[in-house]
Amino acid sequence: MNRVKETLRGLVQPLLAIVIGLLAGAVAILVVGGNVFETYAEMWKGAFGNFYFFTNTLARSTPIILAGLGVALAFRAGFFNMGAEGQMILGGLSAALTALYLPGPGWLVCIAAIMAGILAGGIWSVFAGWLDARFGMNLLITTLLLNYIAIYFGGYMVSYPFKDRTGSAAMAQTPMIDQGVWLPKLFQGMGLHAGFIIAIVAAILIYWFTHKTVTGYEIRMLGSNPSFATYGGVRRIRMMMLSMVISGGLAGLAGAGEVLGTQYRFLDGSLSSASYAWSGIMATLLARSHPLGTAVAAILLAALQTGAMGMERNTDVPLEVGSVIQAVLTLFVSAQIGYSFLKRRKEKKSNAATV
Image (tube, rainbow, N blue to C red):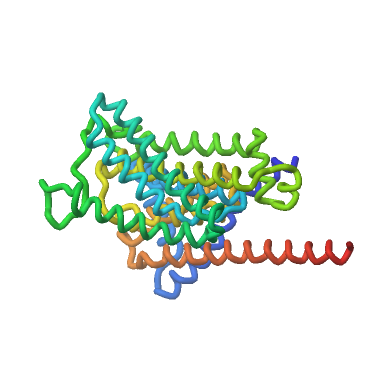
C-alpha cells in the first residue's frame, strides 16, 4: 500500500508542479500583454500539436530522462551527485571517439560506443565518490567542480587533437560519425531515435532495482535513515560507489545517445547549452527521486521547452515566459525540500525530547 502511494505521489507531483508553473506563466503572459489561452494553445501545439512535434518532444526528453534517473538513484542513496553535466559530456565524447576510430560493423561499433559512454560517465562519477571516501571531500562540491573540468577537457579535445579539419574552422567538433553507427530512428523522417526506448527501459529497470532487490532496498534505507542503515550492516562506502557509478553511467548514456542519435558528432557546448543535465535534476526533484515519476516529469519539462519555442514562433509572447514557468518549478521544489528538512528536524527534536 505504501509503495502504491509512493508511486502515485511520484507521478502526481510533477503534474501538480506544472499546473502551478502554468498559473505563474499566465500572470507573466498578462503582464507582457498576451492572450493566455492563445499563448498556451500555441505552446501545446509546439509540444504535441502533431506527430512531428510530439516526437520532437519525446526526443528532447530522452537525455533528460536518463540524466534524471542517474541523479534519482544517487539521491535515493543520500548522495548529491550534481555532476551529471560533466558525466554527459565525457560520455558523449567517448561515444563519438569510439564510433569514429573503432573498426568493425556498424551495429557492433554502435554498441561499443554506447558502452564507452556509460563507462566514461561512471568512472567520472565514481571518482568523486572516491574523493569523498578517501579524503572526506564534500560530494556535492566535487561533482559540481568536476563539471568544469569535463567541459573544458571536452572543448580542448575537439578544438585540437580530434577537431574536424574538413568543415568550418570556427567549429570545435569531431568529424561526422559514419551513418551505419547511428542509433536507428523510430519513425521515418522524425527526430525520435532508439535512445527513447532505452530511456524508458532504464526507468523501469531502475524502479525494479530500487524496489525489488535487496541492494535497492539497502540504497533506499541508506538514503532515508543512514544511522539505522549503518546499524543494520549496510556499508556506506560500498553503496556510495555503486550508486555513483550507476548514476554517472546513466548520465554518460544520455550523452552517448545524443551523439549517436541526434548530433552524429561531438560538438563543443551542445550538451551543456541545452541544459539537459539540469533539467534532469529538476525532473528528479519534482518526482521526489521516483524513477517512473522522473520519466514523466522529464517528458513534461521537455514539452515545456519545445512548446515555448512554438509559442515564440507564433505569438508576440517572448520565449522567457517558459523560463518564468521553470523558475516557479524551481521555487516549488525548493519549498518542498525546505519543508521536508524542517519536518525531519522537528521530528528529531521531538524524539530527542522523548528520550
